[in-house]
Length: 146
Ligand SMILES: [Mg+2]
Image (cartoon, rainbow, N blue to C red):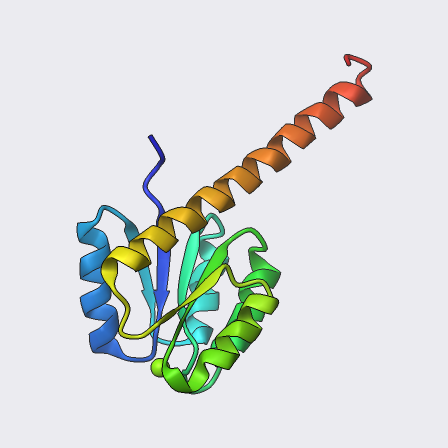
């Protein structure tokens, strides 16, 4: 059994955040929210074990791409799913080039979003495990135990 995914939802539209976070919590996710890229970064600095960030592309101030860059600087293993409208699909694809896990069109279907969140969480945790294994192996080698 996988541990509950820890997710942060970032969008400048409060009603969207409210509806979506309710839906995600109903599906047994732990959900943090942020109404701007700036707030998202502040929260991420305090919660560095975040599995997935669901990130709106179009936001005033720090936009999705800028926020993605900061997220990857602070928590390189945290996976990011970009949320986009028709007008910003290219931006989302650029986001994937910059390390985003995937993107979804708004309004997004819950079933598909959940699938992506679970996939991204598994990827992130497998990556963490790989790093832990490598550290153990390195330590054993260093001590002449292997
Ligand atoms: Mg927006």
